[in-house]
Length: 118
Image 1: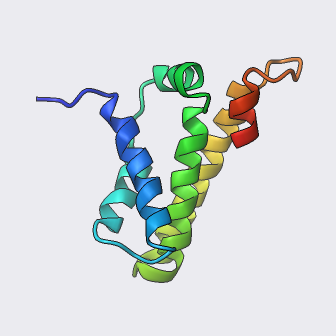
Image 2 (image 1 turned 90 degrees about the vertical axis):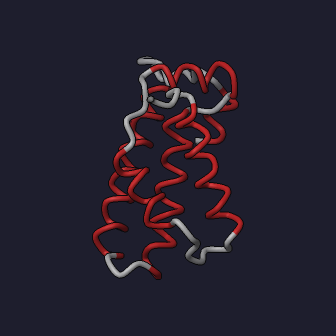
Image 3 (image 1 turned 45 degrees about the horizontal axis):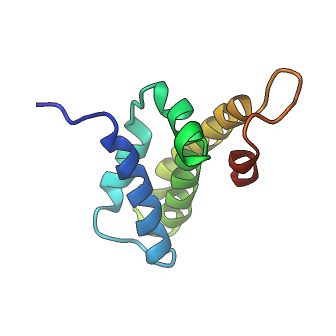
């Protein structure tokens, strides 16, 4: 059976918490978390839902997870250069989505709280 797509949000937030709690050191399951962030397939409704209910762009949260993982992998994983590069690319791609989600075409901010986090 498939897990509800909303559970994916919890996984990404848990990755951020693990990265923060280790102080930048490797942790058990790091490789799995890297693979998850590079291969996730989030539903489109995550972006709007997180903006509406949590005042944060989902893409900004994903970017933070990717960039925190990139920092850790740069020092720890044997395949660090490839993983780090892919995580940075994914993080930047997420930030581009955030920029588009958080501003209207005329440049006005859609959600000021989420924009301050971005």
